[in-house]
Image (tube, rainbow, N blue to C red):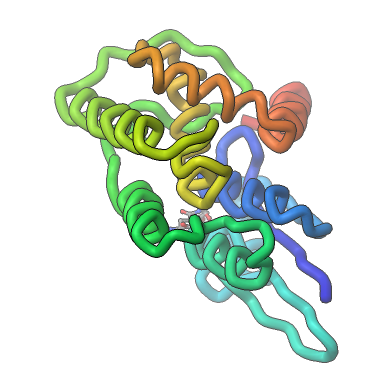
Length: 215
Ligand SMILES: N[C@@H](CCC(=O)N[C@@H](CS)C(=O)NCC(=O)O)C(=O)O
């Protein structure tokens, strides 16, 4: 069995970071193909991997069969299901239902944050003037984090590292890049996520891209 993860620039592609973290947490080897975004040939290049025309994409090859999985949440779900020992979803059914809600909320909402605080993983940038929508979304996220961190015992949202953390990791990076002031528990959570070896590896690659003139 082999996995190939097709992703966008590490400095920019927030969606790509999520399944990368899930694969790292599962501890499975995988190949990586980085497609440089926002180039004249980007669309055509992504189309050679996926008819959906977006990254990330996971290609699974097993025996003589190949399966493509696209969309960050579908890829994370697939990794969780194929590597149950990694406990990428909490074992308790109620906690699992809640963790799924956290992941889905992140996946489908927070447009203000995406627009005003676009991911620029390796840079430190001034805090922009945040509009009301973005401020409300930041407050919702920190309230949700605080609620989970208070009720589940451990360093991560649901105790041990889960897909909920994978889904919020790009938000952590955005808050870090733009120096967003956060309540103490959220700030400490961000520090723990940024310190993960997989996040540090991603950072080194993002810095290299930027040093080489990528966005
Ligand atoms: N909902 C998708 C969003 C994927 C997405 O928007 N990917 C962007 C890069 S971060 C992309 O492929 N852009 C290339 C394009 O639209 O041409 C997911 O969760 O994976």
